[in-house]
Figure 1 (cartoon, one colour):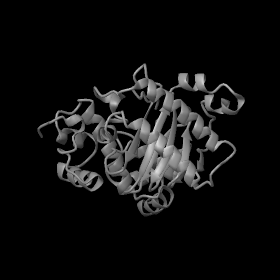
Figure 2: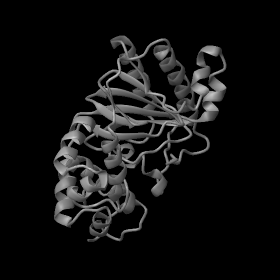
Figure 3: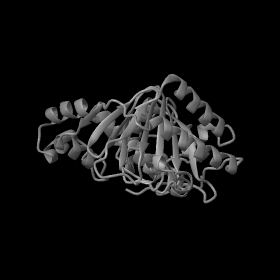
Length: 301
């Protein structure tokens, strides 16, 4: 799915620090015209890209090119990772010499995630640059709540000094590529079994079955086998993954106004009851849904 990141015209991209404890999960497969860069500050994050699951730990620098559909499937509870995206126009202006031309590519089908592990000094420098650029931007709590969902609300990324941000993004882009160039991190990849890939696809659909027996039958295996294989390959249980998908749907439905209340949004997302939704939500975010309602909107159940 091609996703519109809703970046204002006078911005060359955006930058924020995602945190597991505050950032809603976005588990749908997506790509965008912007080049995406992640730097893992703490913990571990896991993506599925082109049928392969890849995990990245602290000091990992990784790139998602425009043609690469990527799906965040898990994050450790302490995960903190910088997300920067760069518009094609910035890349075209900044990357003119041969050594930077790969950044102008949209990527190739089947291309694995390009990444490396930063040396401690490189990591510290990169983090300082990104922290400095974020200092005049929206506060961290707002960015964690809104980024990824701005297209469904009146939120738009704003910075007090767009020229400074744009210059910093250009510097960050070229610096990160200089760190990446000629290096490739060790691959922690798992090629997904066809059964697991099908289960992920089905769970991502709005009419996904509520019970794992039906899901397993649709995948042509037993529920016990599917459960074991899914956990082994994805790294999380079927239940946890399904709940994360439902939370993703909840945020989307609640933000776009298609549901008038938390209860309606929860049921539309696939939760069986408000009690089930409340339990999963509080376990995930450590707060109740009313306190964390996006954009400060107050809705009555």
